[in-house]
Length: 510
Image (cartoon, rainbow, N blue to C red):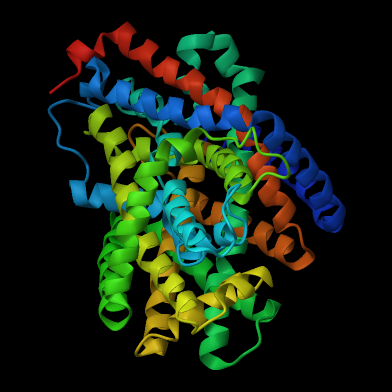
């Protein structure tokens, strides 16, 4: 009997070759590459800001439609079976995947970018600029970005848990629209290669940008220099953690880490409120939330069309954020689909829209409030630190002003490390499931394959960190969002088409 191959080389090898072909030249000529890529991105901001803004709004509307129409009651799996995870476990996993390490990197300091470069008509560093800063930080973790993350999931969950298709792939979800010839041929393979390129690139960027969160705090604690040796040491330890978690799987690895981290993060927030400027943080959180809700439509759709000059940080960064989120959308949706067996489409979409948003707003309120207070009180020149590109170094400086500052730094590193781990172990798990030839409707991806994927992501990131190239790859990841956006709308329609064909809104409900 012929042994089945571990991985589908027809999609994995081309993805790897394309990634190397794109990244190495850009890494070797980093400055020139960034100049070219930023020029392309600036052109997109100037010409398509309106499109990206409407894209986010339309996906929120589509999510609400699928949730509250007849499609929302469709169960992803057997209507008689219980969901795989409790609601708390399920929400914790989605939060760890959706928010992950990025909130730890941006939550305390994202406001500074807006305070230094506020929207037109607002003075830099003013009280209004500070309110814009934290409210905008919350907006970035609002309904649009999580709608971007989840709206491919209904189609992926349906093919996996209802139609029981063996391959958990974007191409498989398109079969209902484009037929067998496209899905099993070159067209389907190109879709799957695009998925893998976007995820492998995004994972490498996350690994590279996540390391300074730990290294800068270690440098502050022990007075050691941040160099490549420290970076590679931290990265290897981190890789061992997320490789182990991915190897253990969702139940014993990802789920446990995600739920544990929710408790630790909650303790850390209370610690900051009690030991730090708790009253100010709560007041500033209320003001930021009020400002956000009052200006939500403005942030969602405003392009500053009547103002002359360069785009403000709010305008350009929103476009980049939505585009960059789009490159992660396929990963988030595939992973969400995998863990949503037994959930209705409504439960899946609304949990992803609400749970990560709530936690992100709380995290931004607490961490951002602490940073703003230290700026206002004159304890630290936070805006100058950020202007001088010492963003990550500012985090331990802020935390050290708390009582038991060293303890605060250690807790912050633990929470950040676990979030970084859960982000990448779910990435590793999903890529392994996507490229595996095993029936994903019945089994988990092979453990050996998860380790291989982890090693490839790590090796790729370390090479780019050593020779330069993470910054160009980050911009490329943002530019890749455009084809993904098209795929998203195709798959939303594919989900509706499959459900209508099967009359699942009548036959597959509780």
